[in-house]
Length: 193
Image 1 (spheres, rainbow, N blue to C red):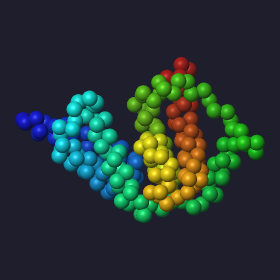
Image 2: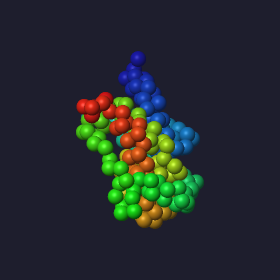
Image 3: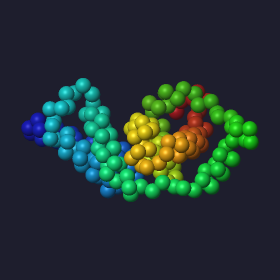
Image 4: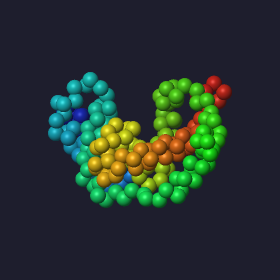
């Protein structure tokens, strides 16, 4: 087996991981498939660009991030952002009192850095992000996982920075609630699963 054939085989074994990542980011299977295909093609066209300084998966995800941004730019006019604030106000009323403080103080989450390293936590986090309504999950992923800046997100999605920050705030509230119920409430006394 040639080195190029072995490299292609290794890349292909990572396709499911890349598809999952792209699917979480784009929430559109066709767009995700396009981004992953473009990523694999770019990697196969220039295998010498992989120097081994990182894991192959890390290198491919780096390429994929750029391809995801390209897909978002290409398809940004197809994305419709929610305009109703009614459901979101109900969530705020459930979580916060009239004085703006939490109705129920957040539980001690132990050492979040330890939890982040755990594969199970990442699965719960991904499930929570998938449950976010409308475009909240997508915006959260663009800002927090792809690390796009506010101006770039607003420009690409034709929204105001105020709208972006409100939706990110709501996404974080929902993620907090989901993680509390799905992960942190189930931790043993020592704080680590």
